[in-house]
Image (cartoon, rainbow over all chains, first blue to last red; front, top):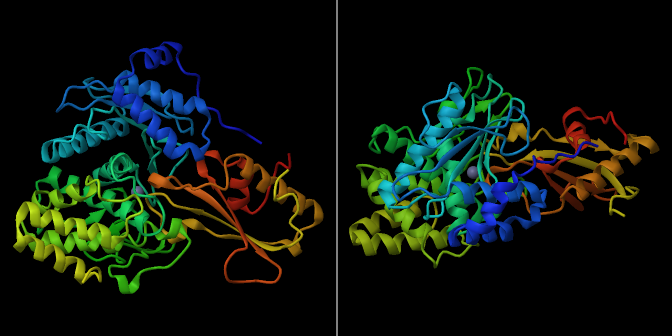
Length: 347
Length: 112
Ligand SMILES: [Zn+2]
């Protein structure tokens, strides 16, 4: 039986980590260790990532620190370093896409919320492209972002969609803030937050108002063969695709259709449609740019210490109403409350 | 020792691959295996694959941040449908090749 081992860590990097790792990097490393110790990943992979973070998490506020690796169609992370912060564009389009999309996502979090990278303290943005063979996924592994190439027919490279890249980076932000447990409602909330910030990054990048936006997630990575328009629709959950290979989009947009399942960690990518739709309703009712009011409220709720890691939809909704009142007054708070009510949450 | 050393009380296995940012229902591709239709050597192979999955890091919370995972549900003789009686989850990144092949192709080439 084949066992997969990651590459050997360059000794100079391990040394650097132990000698020069900043307080925040050590804190990050220990929080990552405690949250994912159950993965039992070979220790070398974790140490490698910690060494990379120690080496590269050093940019001044307002500047990202991006490092893109080529996994060479294998599944060992991170792969070979092919593009470093500040270097001219590489010939590899996919590596360049990851670099520019991560930069745009950094820019959004910094310009709009003054958040300096994933941990707020300049954490390096590590991304691996060309992961696996025709790999139909992108993920955040607790240390870095990973992007498959897709198969070319159903899915194009996962770096093609900036909202998907931003979705993965946001998983890092959520892990280091609310730490929402990836199961049942708190897991669906975790997923929804990644979709909400993913869609805002896409709209911010395109300069779109709520009325101009399509409110789709992952539209740009669907290949020519798919019968559908995206992975998810925040405006109309459950309508993104209906395809012989993918099946039918299972997302509900209201608590009446909440899916009680043990699949997908209790439907984390399914029931996320409900808070997704609430965000859409609230942002479109408020008008203008999504990030200015609705996004500011969502970010305040996500980073509020009162948000428990096992929060339910209603708990998050309550915090958004509190922040809406505090920051924007009762008129905005009423719109927020009404949006949640329209998806069946709250009084 | 593994709790999958013997599957005598199990009637059926179901293997799915779940999670990932796409998480489309069609990508789970459930693979059902009726143990009564497997020869004793085949049953032993299945035991080995499950034990290897368990040893590779199974049985834990997995899936966070869109990481895909394999899920093996075990159903006892007495209950054909309804809830599984036992369950094993293995992160995709740690899954033994034989488990991936069993899910994908419904067979195991390498019995080792
Ligand atoms: Zn996700």
